[in-house]
Amino acid sequence: MSLTLALLALLSAAPHFASAHGGLANYTVGDPPVWYRGYDPDENATEQDGQPWMVQRKWASIDPIFSATDPYIACNKPGTPGPAYIPVTAGQNLTAVYWYWLHPVGPMTAWLAACPPLDKGGCVGVDVNQLDWFKIWEAGLIPGTGNLAEGIWYQKAFQNWDGSPDLWPATIPATLKAGLYIVRHEILSIHIENKPQFYPECAHLNVTGPGTDLPPSSFYKKFPGAYDPDDPSLKIDIYSDAMRKTYVSRPSLLLLEHS
Image (cartoon, rainbow, N blue to C red; front, side, top):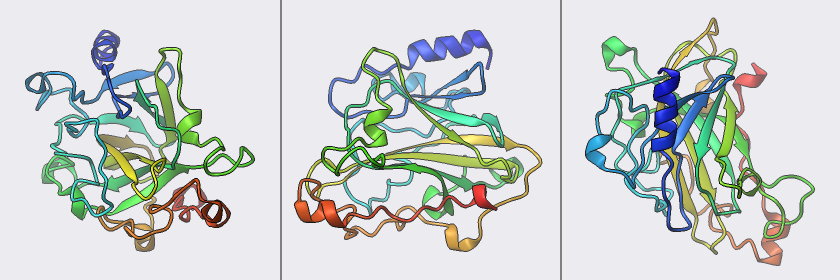
């Protein structure tokens, strides 16, 4: 994408959110950053669906997914694929851009899933519910900032209130095997008692580099299936004194950085 197209995409893809929810609007790669436009549920769908520049899977609403077993929890609803891929070199930062995010409480995670090569359909033809997902990034309550209700979560720390975008950088593992992948960013908001709110968005990546690594099968998860709906870290009251003392984040799946 040329710099001119990237700037036009940036200007046209800043959603005018009117409620407390939100979503992932753009992606950037490199420094200086090259911008890639995502889907905007507030804009005309016919001007986005199937467009040759669309790197993101369609999410038609800024509303959350409320169930860990929802069939759309992998890549949001309806999850229709765009035809394009974001080119990124293993070891580079891929930055997720949110133009509006209000919720302050809960973990954030980034995941990858490998797709077949282009001559076998690439990422466009896959069933995202059948993919093997592995986590490459996560952040939750920032240590030393306080308890569950009053401490600072990364979800709050990455927010900006000056009109500039909220930037979430995650490094594509340097040793990752080259190929086509779907990247999945998820914000999980747990500010309402026993009512988790999942905000997933997905995009297609074309990863290059000399790496050969993929995780062993023990690190793969399915969506739905990755989360137990009765997990106490999902069914949680952050204002409960007992929960503040017993809350434990799910174990990390950050594998490739240690291989």
